[in-house]
Length: 122
Image (cartoon, rainbow, N blue to C red):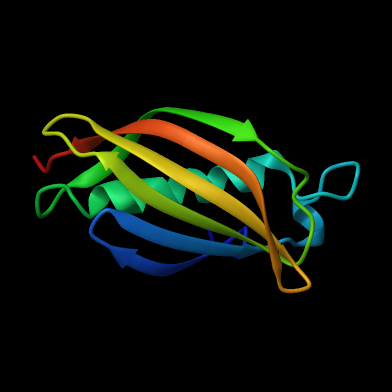
């Protein structure tokens, strides 16, 4: 995340927010933020949201993640807001919405849906 300039802004049980600047090295050939950046922060925000509902001392692993790219990601930064849809003992269903911020306006650029599992210590 440090390579992308991403920062964890907030973590609450079942919710998380990550922001990342759209840096020149994160652009694709048309000048938009690359989908790899969008996916990375969306997956991480969903993972931190899941971690907030897992047992103390757990870590989290993504078992699958789907992304729908809704609009070109242009602007100064991306905001990923992750949330838990359904917590479970073995599987946690998550979603993340990613918005691009340009001139103070947010545009919904991606929706991620996935499944996380706890990685228990030991």
